[in-house]
Length: 109
Image (cartoon, rainbow, N blue to C red):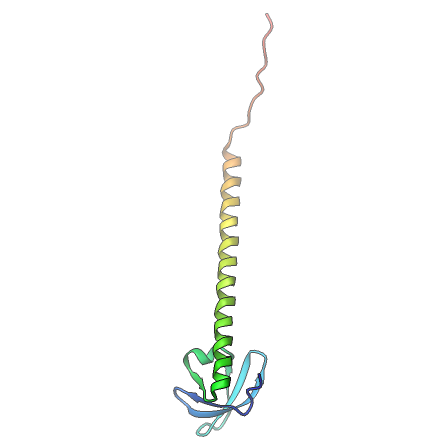
């Protein structure tokens, strides 16, 4: 969705307009600021920015939810890899501690 030209509200800077949206970044021009401000998209809409247009706001909310889902999956994958590493480390330690088995040699009389 194209956000350039959309009006936003920032908790500190007030009313602004999105002037650029490239990848995960947006640039906003605020009336009382000499320069544009850059924000991460959609992260900034969680705490700092609010989209004025309802259709755009719905898209932002969808993107924020998708971001959270992606981060949750990343955390789960990281945790799974960590647990696998711990299990492999424990197995290697256990294998190192196990005494070598000696073959029983039968004595003939």
